[in-house]
Length: 291
Ligand SMILES: CCC/C=C/C=C/C(=O)SCCNC(=O)CCNC(=O)[C@H](O)C(C)(C)COP(=O)(O)OP(=O)(O)OC[C@H]1O[C@@H](n2cnc3c(N)ncnc32)[C@H](O)[C@@H]1OP(=O)(O)O
Image (tube, rainbow, N blue to C red):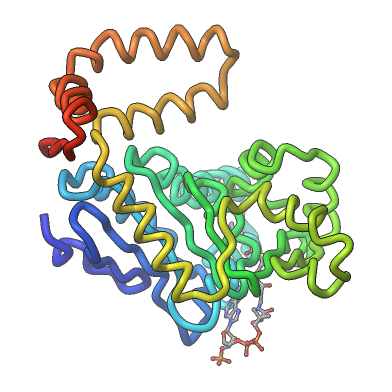
């Protein structure tokens, strides 16, 4: 399947390396704000990628000045429903359905069996945090800042931040502080606060981002390098790891182990196991067939 199958208004899809797909948020003039077309296209794009046998890993970045300014405040379709004189119960059901559709846009990233590497530069605001929380790996530039901004526009974040972000940062107090205050959090906060607190602040950053880079070019290079490494591994093993990591995040250790055993009773029979083991012994690179 070629990238010509991926024609979107708000996303640019390219294939920079073998089995690696680059999805770029592509409304640079509007700082990649998330409009109605974006919510629909994000879901469609990741659903397609999940079934694309020439895609083993995805890099997600933003074009232009920032990663994303979050929800497009000029394109909120539900406002008209909220302001209508429709019965309150009917309005509520309508809004519920629409929220579930918004949620599905980012859940499609989590459901996509291919690992997704988010590469954030400059600003990542509101919906941007919901989005990167659904990704597998997060990289940032050292001038990046992020903001769980929903309380500032009068709502509790409703498309994944409150569910996924706490499990990512594993620091309940910090998570609540960031959600309740909407305070900006900077990758380079350490520099502003003084060298002596560098380790403490860097530790915060590394709770969320596994790598921080000097600038966007080096971050994209790093993200594509990681993507290439992932793409060279057995897709049966990588995608099985993603499915089981997500299952285990949401279940007890016992349930996770049971699921893993049931999963691998099938997957251990894959030809990839023997191919990978032989290549390891012979110090060669295994080549895996499409999945
Ligand atoms: C209900 C569904 C679930 C999702 C919920 C999600 C919620 C959220 O995301 S809450 C957060 C919403 N976002 C914001 O509040 C950020 C608003 N933007 C800004 O504060 C500034 O733009 C920013 C600090 C990011 C950058 O400032 P700067 O001075 O550098 O640029 P601007 O001149 O402000 O912006 C350039 C053009 O982009 C347009 N734009 C920016 N952000 C948005 C946005 N969120 N929605 C729509 N449009 C946005 C801005 O209007 C400028 O356009 P133009 O005037 O045509 O040049």
